Image 1 (cartoon, helix red, strand yellow):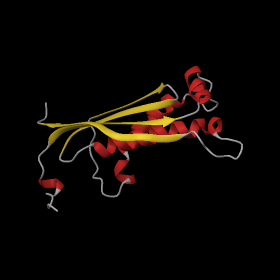
Image 2: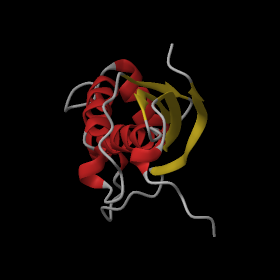
Image 3: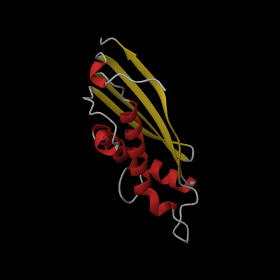
Image 4: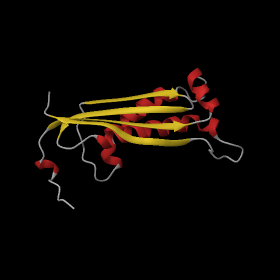
Length: 147
């Protein structure tokens, strides 16, 4: 195993990371989201907001994450087929990466959507046979001298 340099020894560079994930839902749930018929409101816009807030609080949630002063963040949610796809991007000029911020934003956005549509997903026993989070991953990462 290679020893890593302490974060304060790393140079300040521009960093951007984009993460993506999906919440699979029943066809009727996807249709309700598309048509704006979810009782609690718009799960896509609410999920986007929750994801942005979560990015900023990542070090409070993940013990070894350093506080990163984000210079940019974006979370976008959309219905695709029988699922909600969320993509989140975090940016900073800093000494450590922003992958965890992007992943946290996407995960919290997806969990927020699930919370808002769970009443549509429950079966007679109160379980969620269709709803599941899938594919949470970093899809892009950049690192270069600041612009």
